Length: 277
Image 1 (cartoon, rainbow, N blue to C red):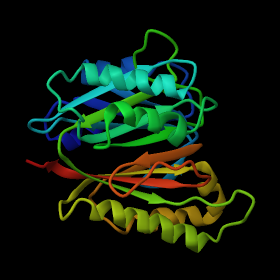
Image 2 (tube, rainbow, N blue to C red; image 1 turned 135 degrees about the horizontal axis):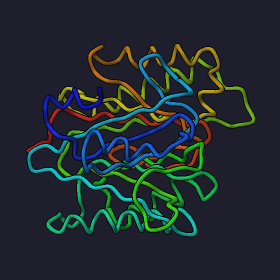
Image 3 (spheres, helix red, strand yellow; image 1 turned 60 degrees about the vertical axis):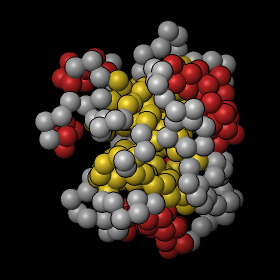
Image 4 (cartoon, helix red, strand yellow; image 1 turned 180 degrees about the vertical axis):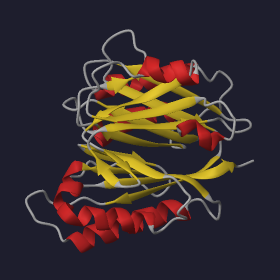
């Protein structure tokens, strides 16, 4: 199903997020269907589908490189997220010998819980190597499993699309974990983040919308989580895929978004139709 949206093109990388840790290694199964494709992702508490959050199943996103674009995936271990993040960045950069000094594009990182925060521990050292033009989202997952090939036990799995892609990031601030936030305020913040991400496309049509939401935010919304999801989907064409996942913590950096470690935040990623020339 994930491959049908590529209109016959072969995928260059796959994002794999599972709700829970599967009983068997699913990466070989994916490569058995799609061929020797790079895979990045991990296991978490729930994935976001057209029906909202579900706690069983797998989200598979196939991406193909546009003309003049390249992609890369890497998984790396280490003593903490700083070591793992820099290790993954070096591996990806090593595969782009003709890249610009600072590559431009979109990065998605998935890290195990318990080894550090997404902004300070992962994104800041990652940005030292990748530079400011590789807009990157880091998810601290809810389960101790990340996907990807590594010589040791990986702490981080990352995927990057390198080109002048039309991409947008939106960020919804978190809240004090000791308080009970207003659900309407949270929903409006999520909608504003979505509209900001779409605005960054500067008129290009969105081909994919990714929503990465902290479990604390989803839990605080309770029954209103369905209203939040409906409001987010209401900002885009009904034919545009809108999916995502829940995670313990999320942070990002890119145009208009600064890396912040916050309780209850949300990040929206909008990917445009084609790379810009």
